[in-house]
Image (cartoon, rainbow, N blue to C red):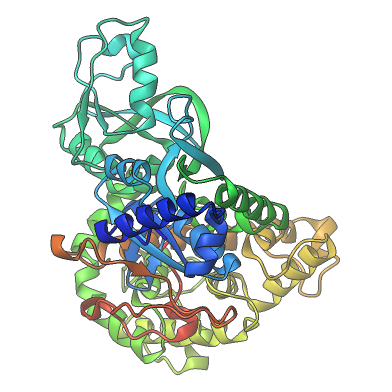
Length: 501
C-alpha cells in the first residue's frame, strides 16, 4: 500500500504495483487496499472549519466526518497536517494519501486531477475590508487596489474569471497564511481588502471585529473531499454513499449544527465587548472557574461561559426578578445548594458549578455529548420540567427528543397558548433557553480557541495523528499524548465536549 507519506513506502507501493502488472494479477481496488492495510490516510490543514487540535483532542467538521467514515470502513484514521492547500494538493497529486480535506469546492480545473465528494457545507468567496477604509460596492471598485488571498483557494479561480472583465484587477497570494492569518492582517489594517471563504469567516469573525463583510463573489459551491485521480473511484464512491446516508438519517445536519449553528450570536459590539472582558475581567476569576470546575468535574471554560452569559462576570449583578451574583442564582437555588452570600464571587461560582452538575446529571445518560450539555444548559435556564415538555412535543412531532437541533425548534412553542396548554408544566418563555444555549456555545468557542494547545514545533509536523479508540467498533488506535499543560482533568461525559471551532 502507499502507506502514508513516506518515500520508502511510496517506492514499495510502486514496485508492488509493477510486479502485479508484470504477473498479470489484477490489482485490488483502493477501497480493498485500505481494508487490507486497516488504515485510511488523510491529508488536511489546520483550520476551525476542517481540523483543529483542542484540549479534548482533534475536532472540526471534516475531521468528525472522516472519523465516522473510518469507523464505517472498520479501519484506523491517520491524519497528516499540511502547511496549506498547496501541500495538500501536492500530496494528492503524488498519490501519497487516500483523501484530502482542503476546504475547497470542486472546480472545472480540478476535475481532471481529483475525484471529489461534497461534504454538505456550502461556501462562497467573501470580500472583506478593514472598517477604516472605504467600503467597496463591487470588484470594479478594487481596480488598481491591493487585494489579498490565501494560496490554492477558490478565490483565485473566481478572480481570474473576474479579470476577464476588469483588466486592472490585481491580487496578492500569500502561501504562508491561512484564512485567520489574512483576517488578522485585515484587522490590523495591513491588508485593506481580502477575500476569504464564507464558512471560515463565520468561524473566525468574532476574533476580528475590525473586519467587515462587503459582498460575495461568484456563486456558492459545496465544499468537498478530494481523492487522487490515480486511484480508482471505489473509495470516493464509498464516501459519497456514506455521506448520503448521514444526510438521510440527519447525522450530517446534526454535525453541521454543532459547528455552524450558533455562529451568529456575536455582532461587532458584542464581540469587542466580550474580548475586552476576557482581557480585563476574566483574569480576576479564572482560577476560581478552574478550581470549582475541577471540583465538580466540568470544563472550566464552559463554567466561565455560563458566568459571562449570566452576568458578564460581574459579582454584584442583580436582576429585576431577584437573581443575583456572578452566576445569577435565585434565592431558592442558593439555599438548596448551600450558598449563603450570592454576591460573593467565589461562593457564586462554586454554587453555579454545583448546580450545573446537578442539572447535568438529570439529563438522560443515553444522550451523547455535546447534546447532553446543551440540554443541561437549557434546563439550567428554563427548568428541567419545561425542557421535558419541549422534548415531549418534539417526540410527538416525529422528531428526535434526544437531539438538541430538533428540540430547540420546539422550545419556543412553550410561549404559545395552543401548545403550552397541552404540556405538564405550562407556559415558559421558550425562546430564551434557545438563545441562552447558543450564546454560551459561542462564548465557549472563543474561550476554547484562546486556550487551545500550542502549535506543534516543525519537527513534530510529520507525526501521524490518530483517532481515539472507538469502543463500539473495537478498532485499535495509536496513542497520542495530550497536552498536559492545559488539561483541566475532565470526566468522560464532559471532557469530550469538542470546541466547535
